[in-house]
Length: 201
Length: 138
Image (cartoon, rainbow over the protein chains, first blue to last red):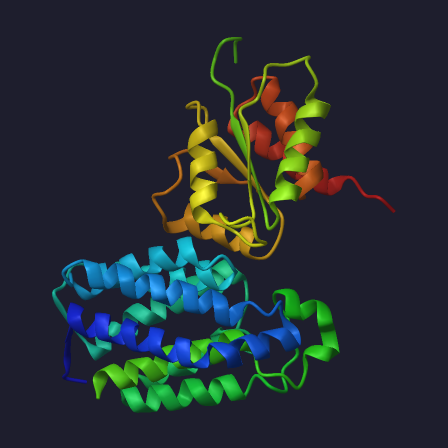
């Protein structure tokens, strides 16, 4: 937990996330067409491409400033529910980090925990509802062990949504029919943690 | 509030441009000519006309209707709700006195616009729109 992270690290993280979203866009849309409105891949791709553009064109600021700028960009460009949700996650985490030029992994974990809490409040949902929280919560907690452990825990969390009954969003209207499909939001959340591990390697 | 003072502005946010604009026309029509003309704007769909929500369209609409008496935002579902909630909670994109109304979209819009046309303040507009939930249909 001694590693010190700067704004450049956060830029590398978000860039890696954009790359993974790009690579997995088709799969995200496929998952979303089973229980959603088949726009998750395209929405995430558009949002993260805009994030990379934003953080690339300015000199890397503090970790907090980079996250706030990225969150704001997601809210304004995604166009679907994932925009305000991911936007709030990053923006809240960024605000929680304040203006420190460098942060520890522990501080990043605390900030992301605050972000996840805001996502929970915004969506009015809890783990087990078959949402992005099912990957975010275990991912953030496993950061205490390592970035790799967090990536693994988030990925497992996403897979664990398969047998769940959706309780939030459009998928919840499907009732029992939502069972047996992996949640697209949890899947993209796992990509965020995979990107974090990639940036740290 | 006496005549001549600023009216509360109303923004209608829908997944669909057509829905937002139609509900705005409906609310303005039902408000009639009895009261003052309420600043009213629709922010529906994405900037390219697709289904979805755009924080830019919402922010522009809110600025357009802001007369200094506050801005009431009504939303339909999904990302419209989450986007406005996120903007109200953390953002700086909306005018200072902006409020997301907890109300059904169509009925709440009519109640909000009619109430705002009387010169009522933002709290009264919000209360009137919220009361639309109490009107049961069965």
